[in-house]
Image 1 (cartoon, helix red, strand yellow):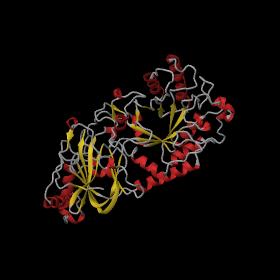
Image 2: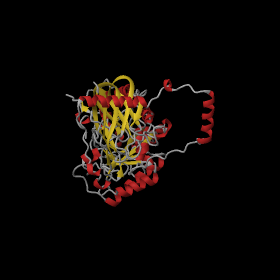
Image 3: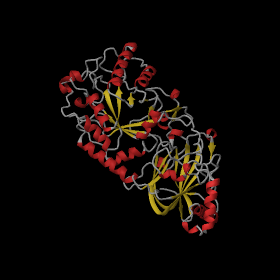
Image 4: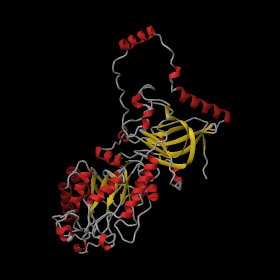
Length: 545
């Protein structure tokens, strides 16, 4: 815990911190003239004593659980498009009855390439299609039912929405995912456990063997009240999916690869772990609070996916309008900015295209993100750390790695340290109101608590406290200005690792989420592997109204 001291102690310590930072950044002015004779001797000594190639220091041990390769690729994608499309698009409904005549499905201008183009241009690297929603209508010509595109007038009954989307996604380098609803309101065998599970798996095999690489399979436990009682053989389904598409992640309330965040507003908990206990969750019956926050003691790697629609409904309705770009930005902070993937539903309209007004909002949303995050205001900072693995001369784990994008280069401290601090000298006074932090999650999620300080008025002041980082953490706070910063890790499951640290200026958002500035950890201190006794006693806290 931090302790209060006198102002003289605060000023002295602040000066010492700045001196420490500058001391570690030598300039050419400190180099003395060396005689030719001395230089010759030094060169001889270098080649006779120093090995030609220094041995690398091994990276720190990973901490379990770890993401699989498909889970890691999923997390790196950051955002995905959801495409709700089917008879509901034409009947102005959300949950179809399964009795709508297939003849209503006739999107005369359907263009899957437009869907993919809009997604990619807006910064989304994967698309997920509702191949079959609850009404049972199939957007591919399934051989197990007549209730599909082959019974519609679209493409004279010869069309295949899944095939067209798969081709467009492949040509654009966008990952493809498919949603196959377990609940089927049309199929007559629904309610007969064995028979329907066989039917469902038959359709799943069609989807996973006809359309190339599938990167995500999406399913849920949605079912209306009073529906027929049935047992879904989830474990069998999961095994089959992984067998047919080993590169795919499976989404559900309880994994096995990604989990539902627990709401349909696109909002994760301010503390959000990728760690989870699948044994504590059930599809269709998981505690939303547990899903939102994850579990710091979880034994499974199960990151959260935040689903939300750009419109009030999941399917397109002529009477509805999209959310504003600023609203999408707010959702982005509270989903992708909280160690989750943002799954944004953008439903095609009844002509088979994404509506112009939705495209406009998506372009504005992209421009907002570009304006804020394309410029790291710390990119030219002078950095130092409380310690560096292998010593300060080792560039492999240098604090300067945190200025490079990507998770595979990172700062690592020496083992068994009492302080974990990154010092930044921005070389000029800078105004900012967003902090971005990333961990190298391929080595596990580690950080439990952290905070950012600035030097202000001769003393260090806390700007923001945070809990959990994971793949990406974005924290907003009222605008501050300073040249000197300290990023401090207070608690961690193991030696903390930082792959990216950025500060940004968001001139568009209005601060409204006090939870981000008063984050609290839900971890029992006795369970923390190492807790930092951070004793820079000059720290005081900025008070916000």
